Image 1 (cartoon, rainbow, N blue to C red):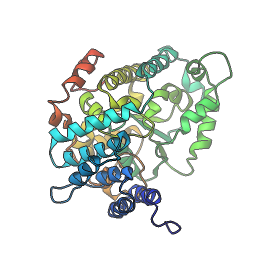
Image 2: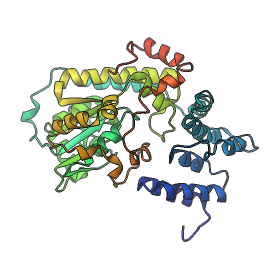
Image 3: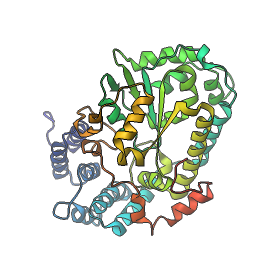
Image 4: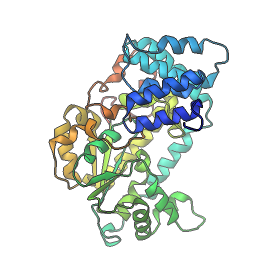
Length: 388
């Protein structure tokens, strides 16, 4: 910024950093500055929309709609601005208009992707096949350690909220969303002609554990959280390598879960989230995988419902802490006091006290989400009000 104070890309990076640190007013000012220097820097509009709850007196809907109607705005502009307009209209309670923009933006994003959901569904099936019900006695392979806590689940299911609550307890810190475990696992696989899923299932768990510890660097932490949603793919390997670790899966009702993903623009991850049919197929495969882990590992997989976490945070937080072997404090639910960095899609929301307004949010869009419900049922998800 000092070298190039008018470069919108640098100003946007500053805004992103301010948001990660919880300085939301400074982040909004930086977004305004980026847009003033380059009105076509579309990422800044989306980031700005997410920093606070917009109001009738103070929003940017008209500005963004005018910009999209101007010459030079393409599908990329629609992708960023559509999500931004949809989010602000949702804040204003204009759900009919909001869904139209979410839908157009999701379509624009999907058109830019080369993706086949069948490949991801097949990968999940291979994970299940290569981690069958009959497993060797894991306690004899690795030394148990309670240091590590894996918090996982689909994006927008409350994983960041759970992480921030646990981090308020003494001696707990988080590595955030890292690929530490998958890197450790893949580095320990043997070079054979079998596919990667079979080789991961056969990896020496002692090597995996040693390499993971070197990457995670727990130091003097009493508990160290790894909060990568996609770690649900590696739960079998986690259990074998780190049998003393805690595993907490955040779940959410299928409709709320899928719609929350649909209305979010992610980076390179979660390409299934921009189309109702692909969302349903992936969600159904994910639910099968979680049922497999639950059947295989029983109570070791601690299931935390998002709805319970926001509606009964003390009771649910107490149970979550107990599962991790941690003493509970009611002050832990005051997540707005957690000053640590957050770089997730929830980075702005976690600066607010816990709120319940996202529970059953899909019902505000019920007239538009019939096709999603149909696709979920076709994929085998018959109970739309309950998780796996």
